[in-house]
Length: 428
Image 1 (cartoon, rainbow, N blue to C red):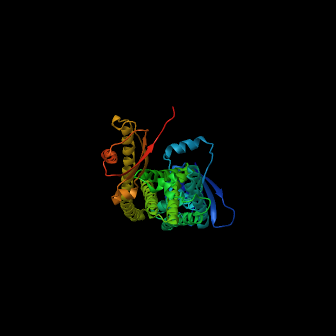
Image 2 (cartoon, rainbow, N blue to C red):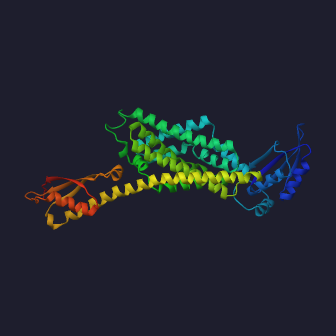
Image 3 (cartoon, one colour):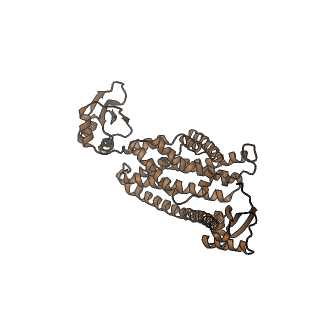
């Protein structure tokens, strides 16, 4: 339930009461004795779904918008009349005015926003370098990225240019700050005792996850955008949804910063693509869901104008996401190819170990060097095979070529195969 309190200017009391009667809500009038410009305060308890029609009725009746209308959440209302009111006003979404106010509150002051974002990025960067998923998720609780993402979309839908511009600015500037913070931390840590000599960021699983994104990453961003709007318009679970949005943005941005610090262009491009796709997808779904939820500018004359702006933004976002998805699709295909070659090689080596034609030879996969860049550069996978040879066992002169041909047939691609023969003795 909500409690709407209207500070009524001199001469407008009848207008307010008539609007309340037309809306079909109960009210109480308190006389104002402060000798100010208000003659009374009208208190109106209503369900959340009745706030917007009540405020729209006041506006249409010519009520002065320079006066005060305060909407507060009522924790408990003890009255059977409240149930009857709730039955007449169905719906679960909050009013346009509450939506705008909550979106503005979720986008904190710039100083607070950047301090929290830098702290969150620092923790997330440490989690990436330590390969600690728990640390990364903990950092996301601090990240304040949900507010700007939703504020930008709310500003567009309700025709608040200032709110929309502020949301866009905080998102872009925040991600730039996150990348710069991670790059600085990475630059300071390189070559120190905190990281092993020759530390390679591309071998860390948590980082590798962000530099080999695939099209499934879109589901996290799209789902986060939908969940963010639902939590905002229904006032549920905003903290947990904020974590989901932050997970989609901060760790990839921190990975971009580490790629800058280590001088890895591939890391910067792949993780950067993931950041942009997630950012655009969250904004796209937020815009669409807000509009489908029925939110419009309070001035009817502005609806067509706002719809045109929203349509153009949706088109731009869809095109940008489609272009970036080509990169994600390429990464998905390349990652699949590298994994498929490694799987086929391993499977064939196991079959060769069981093949009587090779006697007692045991084949082991030492390593397969085949990265994403090799797929598109046309480089052959380099496979190193360890062969355990029992004492007295010999292999044919064309043994290496035979092994290579079998592996190439299994993998369906030309390989460069190196074979390491090891004489083994096993105790009884």
